[in-house]
Length: 593
Image: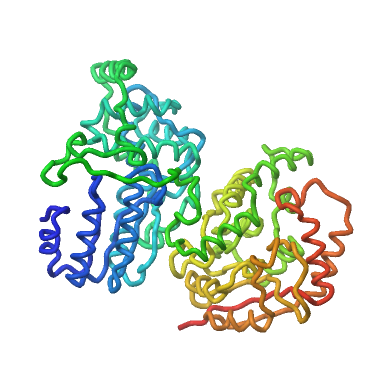
């Protein structure tokens, strides 16, 4: 037993302890506790710390609690000889299920959710991931896991599941955030909600409408770390379905709903950490521990996590990586891919309510020779219905959809550009493949995926943007089973001068990191692979690209969401024709240790 804010007590409690789960106290000075634990862990020689955080965590979020979670993570990263595993859930299933009594008694699920979706994890699944990290911390050292449920759900679908659990029809009611916050104040005792909690909650609610919880969700982290499939929302809801529907309870629920209109919100702007001072006496925390008012500085510009800049995300901190990410985002997307593709589909006479995977062929293969190259590479990989596949650097998801549709297997798609990830999820839903494809926003040199998760990894037209290619292929090897296959379709430098810009992967040389074919092959081999096939298809690629350029314009094509695409294609085709660029197709097998 220890007071988590008393360093001496914490240090005494950790004598003889090898591994620690740090579950941060819900408190405006949680960072004090994290530092105390970090110092005690260092002095006690603790082997590993598994820390519960937040997927929202960033240094510029308007919620003080969220900013402190980000700093807590950085504190534990500084421990030099201690394994650190981060468990960062999003919005828990538990948070929705606080509304079970209202749903059971009145048949409504009042939630300011907008059109955003979530795959909420159960408390039990979060605990399973924590335990997995504690049992094998060195395997998970340096990893950040985000437990989720198995399926993205809208607020209406969550209401349906709650209704099935409580045995009556329940409908989602979109309520203003101010009304929701009044309800939280009225029910503060049951919810154990103080003003610090309310101050944080008011900043979490907009994230739902912004679609924050959809990004990178659902994950496979419960299965990867705990070895079990995550619980679905209905299973979780049934554990909470205990509200008794009596006349008295219904009357009290109705009276509470009416009273809500007359209950003012707390003046939470007084406690907003971005603009004011948090006074522990008003918040209800002991004055002996926090003398006076605690001045809490905020970020110069507060942003929800959905709108935060690349520098805020976990393990993306150096200036070089920030510059690279920023340039890559601007190269590949202006944030309007979905709208432009939707307009093009409608203009081409396609019905969005009856869209087939074949309708997207001209839009989705953002690499040389398009679908023809994809098909040839997939055939070499020898996929089947049970093959676990990763498309690393997936763009808007064309290869993932082709594989999922053709073989019926599960595919994970990872891309750095959030706009592309959102567009991929939307297209997956339109063609009915979202149950087979999981889309994650992430860096292919630091994949948000556990070890040995896949049998085949595809990497098409990715390495040209990446200077540290060995890191790219080592990550591919890390997430692959022994004997798995790496399927490569890429552009390499030729024998002559630099190509002309812009090119499909680079508007200017700052984003282009070309090596020749022999160098690329050597890097792949040094990253843990044996080359089985290494084919130079430059001549075929040049001929195919010349044919494509000679074809009449089509309303559907990569030009729909990629600026100056015709000019980029011409420069690529000329460079392939005169030998300044080569096109390489490769199959490499992961070496066994």
